Amino acid sequence: MENNSTNNSQIKLAVYNFEERLKIFHIGILVRGKEFHFGVKQGVHVCPQKNNGKKFFVLINRLIPRKMAFLRYVDIFINDIQLSTSLSMDQILNIKTNLEKYRFGPNTYNLFNNNCIDFAYNFICCISSNGELLNKNNLPNEIRQPWITEPVRAFNKKYY
Image (tube, rainbow, N blue to C red; front, side, top):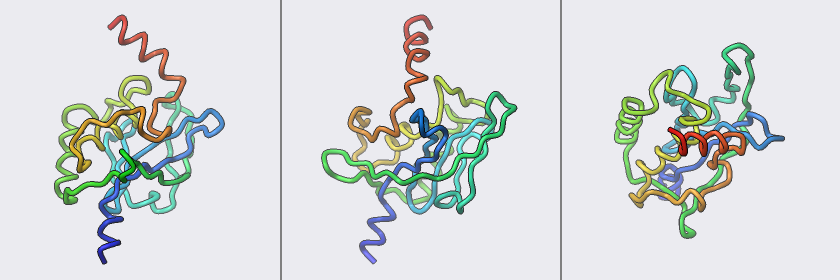
């Protein structure tokens, strides 16, 4: 029972294939047996593990449908300790609601400035037991911004 409880409190990345050849993924967060995702029109979405085996659908330029299949779960380690939470599901859902209210609501998705990776990073900072902001350089590659977004982010920081 203890092992199951420990597994349930672990925080993992849920990685879905957007364009594997270009190393572009959609990511969510798995915690307490639920996945939390941030998407284009719905804001933050909570679903069962691996989305019950269903593929996610996204619209590219609001026209072209694309399916994203589940790829893998990725463990997150900080200083050789797996990231976990001591929060209950009710507390986690409250954090999700607050993040939706202030930054990740419906229709706030922006590929370059407010995407699933931004949500995942903010969410794990809020729910992780260590209570510290995490150094992005120590996190798995999947939670780093795709190469395609970096020039736009740099431009926006400099001029806006």
